[in-house]
Amino acid sequence: MEKLLTITLVLHIAGGTLSLLAGLVSLITSKGRRAHRVSGNLFTAGMTLVFITALVLAVAKGLTFLLMVAFFSYHMVLRGYRALYLKKQHLGMRMALADILLNGIGGLFNTGLLIWGVSRLLTGYHYIPIVAIVFGLLGIWMVGMDVRHFLVPPKDKKQWLYTHIGSMVGAYTAAVTAFGVVNIHFLPGLIVWTVPGVSGLLITGIIIRRYKQRSSPPPASGKKAYITGIPNPTGYENT
Image 1 (cartoon, rainbow, N blue to C red):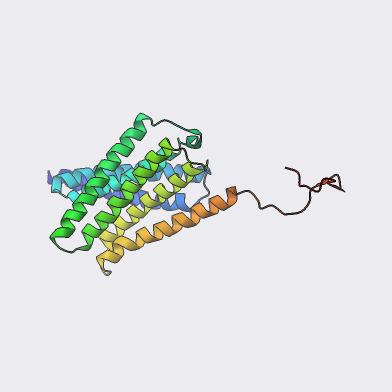
Image 2 (image 1 turned 60 degrees about the vertical axis):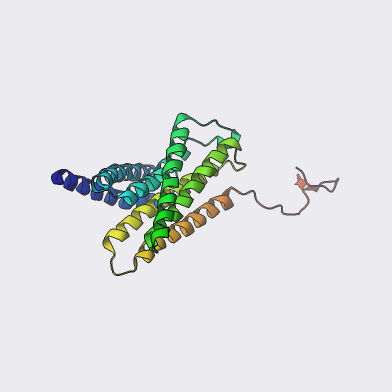
């Protein structure tokens, strides 16, 4: 049994290393380029390995928090990947089986993470329950937004892209956080848990804002329209 757990731990570390490296490449390369797609697929594969091995380790060692955080992190990976297939959601799409399972299981475990955090916080103050509560609330919010976009199609046709970016950056942030928790011991635990998350939110906001600015129509110049060099006799701009 111990040998199996050792092998599982090695695979867990390997998956985490792959996720950190591939995720960084995906983050800094242009979206839509081959390098971004390949590194993104490697990141997803690495996070899948991390998720599977985390489940084995959590169940074997009775680590409830690790189990739920594994679901929280992998939910973001699958959410970001699934968003690539929802490019026509602004036109109205029905929930497929994949969406029902993703949001159902994600909602269940994120709710469990929230309840676990609240119950532990009531028994005594510690930053881990606070982290669990924040993660649980964030996960529930993501599920709520995804379900809402099926019921009320988003007006922005690029919503799938924003969901993809936010989820994948969030998943990468989770990988960075896990690395920090295991390897950084000279800083307070609360800082190690929160700084990557705050940084991830800022990065997500900056990237999404840039994409929205690119897709926004240019502002009206306010000048009269001219046709073949002759002022429009009506005095109105062409539409």
